Every structure is written in C-alpha cells, then in structure tokens.
Figure 1 (cartoon, rainbow, N blue to C red):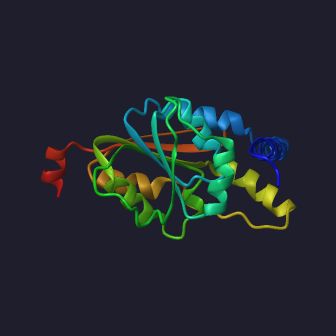
Figure 2: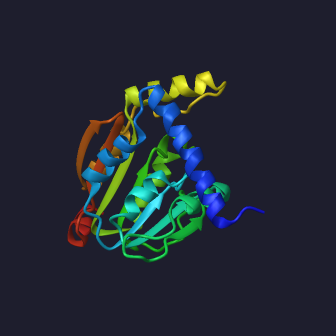
Figure 3: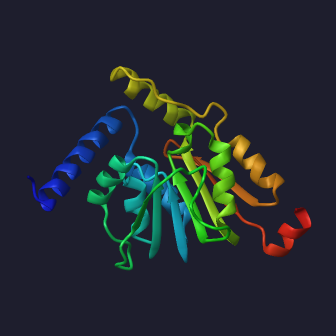
Length: 213
C-alpha cells in the first residue's frame, strides 16, 4: 500500500505528463489557469467551485481563496484532486462535496463567489446548472464561467481523436449563458485568451432583484 506522500508524487507526475501532451497539441495548461484566475480575482468571502475534476483550477484558486468549497459528481475525481491540493491559502481545509450541480445542496445566497472552469461542456443540462449557480450566489456576488474557446475545443478534439475518444463541445460557446444572465439583470463581461473563453457576471443587489422579479 503506497503512502500518502507516494500517492501525491505519483499524481503530480501523472498530471505533468498530461500537461506535456496538452502542450504538444498547442494548449498550455498553466497559462490558461493564469489567464482565468487573473481575470476572475478578487474572490473574497465564501467561494464555491463547480466541477472539481483533477483539481487544476482548484489548486490555482487555493492560492487566493480562504473559504473554498468544491463540488463534483465524481468521487474518484475528487480523490485525485485531494492529492493535488489539500488546503486554501489561509491554511483552511478545502471542503469537498460530491453532488449534482443541477441540484446544489445549499440554500439561496450562500456564497460570495461561484466559479467553474472547463466543466460546462461536459454537462447534460448546463443551463440548469447555471440557474443553480445564480441561486446560491449572494446579491452583488461574482459568478465566473470559463470554458474552452473555439480554438481550445479544436485542440482537445485533436487530442481525444488521437486517443480514440470524442470530446464534447459547447457549440455556441458562452453566448446563451451570457444572454440568460443579462436578461436576469446581471452585469456581465466577456473575454477570450489562452484558448479559453471567460464570462464574468455580478449578481444584482436585492432591491434590483425585487424590481425584476
């Protein structure tokens, strides 16, 4: 039975090897993370990540967020992510939750920030997940949705095709989600870079919500 340190080192090697494959096809994972995090910050207060995955984005967030919760439907993925990152920048343990992002187990206005990266293209009902992200965010809180740009999807199409797999896509990018947020009275900004597309939205204040309800 390998020790925890041995498991952490093995996981680190596996993630580095995967990043080499990504880079060979034109995707720089550290640069994409830096692009997203640099534009999403600051993230004060209590922050929820949707889609833990292997923990790359979680690890980048942990350098800047003190109160961090991450949710994923896949317990095995979260076990891998725990090997990658265990604590937030403030030294607090990160809370790992296994659950359905379309039915979040928190009451309304529970978080100051809700973020996700490279997860929405995997979802069966992404709009339902977006509505849940909006529901659990406090008035004036920040929502950040990041996924591959068209070129990013082309890169991962090549990677998966070479491995005999098919990579899912968001055919219309983040356009539908931006429209939904703006129709609900949220302020949005949108940008692209490092093979990523990023949508940031700020929830309206309570008084605005009552007028638009």
